[in-house]
Image 1 (tube, one colour):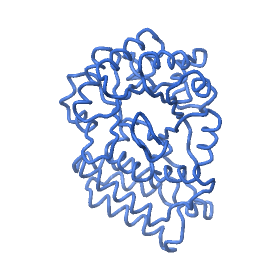
Image 2 (cartoon, one colour):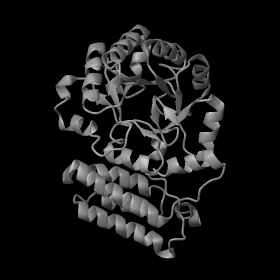
Image 3 (cartoon, rainbow, N blue to C red):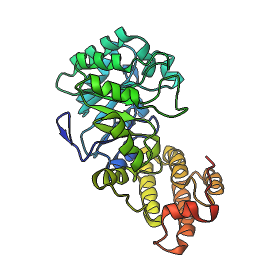
Image 4 (cartoon, one colour):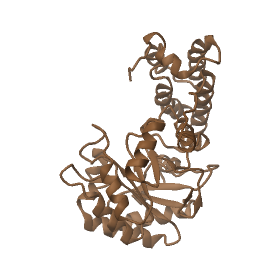
Length: 344
C-alpha cells in the first residue's frame, strides 16, 4: 500500500495506545503483519521533553519506518513546536490526537475535547502543518463529542482544507468512551466527503469484522487497538483473510510462548528491570487471558518483581499447556472442556 508517499506492507495500522504502543510493542506488531504503528501520544508541553517517560515515548531506535509520532495538546503554538521537535528527532509522520476520551486529557481541552471547538481545531491544524511543511500531518478523531453532536464530517473537511493528509476515525463519540458498540456510518459519511485517506477504527477484533468494516465504510485502511493486546498476530490473520478470503490456523501454544517471552525480553531491555517487570505484568495478563488456570497464575505472577522469576513463571505456565504437544492450538485450549476464564 502506498500511504503518504511511503510503501507499506498493507493497510493495517496499530492504534496509538497510552502505556501500550511503546517501541517494543510497535516492533512486534510490525513483525506480526501491521503496515504502520503510531506511537503513544507525546505531550506538546516543551517542559516535559527532558523527562525519561517522554524520551522513551519518542525512542524509535532500530524501529522500521515510517516513524509516526502522535502529539497531544490544546495550544496551537506548543503543538507546532512539538511537531518540529519530533521531526528533528526522526519522526516521518506527525499525528495529532483529537480522539483520546480520557478525562485527564479532555479536562485540559485536549484529545477528543477539541472537537467541541472547531475554530480551535482549524488553528491547531494550520499551525502544525505550517511548522513541518515537508512532513505529512495526520489526525485522529472520534465521530463527535456526544451522540447529539457528531461533527466528524465537519472536522474532516476542516482537516483537509488545512493540509492534513490522512484521517483516522474511531467509531464512538467522546461521551461513549469505550462503551457500547462502534458505529461505522459516520466513518462512511466522512469517506464520501473528503479526498484524503480515511482509516476506520473501533471494535475491529477479527478478520471477518475487518472485512465487514472495510465494506461498510469504504475506508482506505483499518486501525486496530485493544484487540491486539496480547494478540499481536491479529495483523497477519486479518492480512491473510483480506487477501485470500480464508482464515489462518490459530497460533500454536509454542508460538504464543515464544512471542510472549521475546516481548518480555524487549520490555526489560527497553525500560530497565524495575519498570520493565511492572510493564510486563499487563502484557502477560493479556497473553494468558482466557486460558485454563490463568487467573490464579496472574495473581501469583503479579507478586514477582524480578525478570528471571517472571520469565520462569511464564515458561512454567505455558509448559503445562503444551503437554499435549505442538499440535494443540491456542483456540483449542480456550474452548476445551469449558475452561474459558474471562477474569481480567
